Image (cartoon, rainbow, N blue to C red; front, side, top):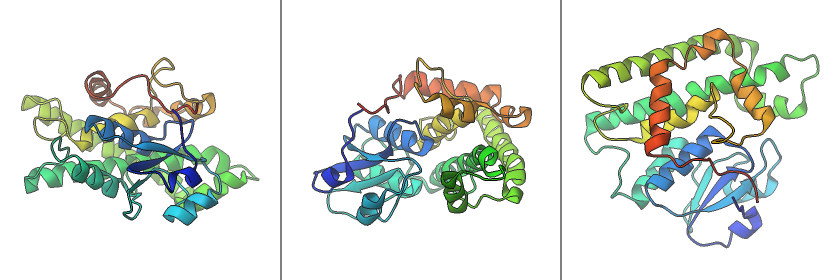
Length: 257
């Protein structure tokens, strides 16, 4: 993938999507998959994972990714705002239903996966733990730990939250199967399905032929205890695999050219 610098992006037209170059961050990959499904073109912009990203902060108010900037509109970085921007830009391929009840379900399930204190958030707390439990943690880990509210208490509590979310998602898919659906909500693909497909990799990444992620990241994602590994139930893993088979192009494209 060819990334523009922040300085180049500021004068570029259309939709610009700030992504962490060289790694498949689940929030960024979910945004990319949603935009691809909706046939929305964008220009990738480079963010340095864990770096200072001073130019990015001056432009968008953020140092992390993903961030979307469309034309002269204000930048958006929250998963919900990114999703709503995609819905506005391509309403003909909706991933959030208009029906209020179904809409609540889709956004609620998506929040359980991608939102604050959701599945991805809890896995991030676990992934930071080996570095932050050292006598002298690396500076980058300390910065990230402060940013995401890491503490020994939140780390210990993460597995219980992961198990609760996993049980809810697995039970939902079981009920959906009984109703004749392969999807998290209703009978068509929604944003919730895209979020789960991308965040499931934080427990079990796709193989190198489909996801050429750096070895250090693969080790961090895949090195889980039995309790965490069990959160990716056979039903949840099968749903992930169907999404890549039917809706998300492989191999993943994130390596910097």
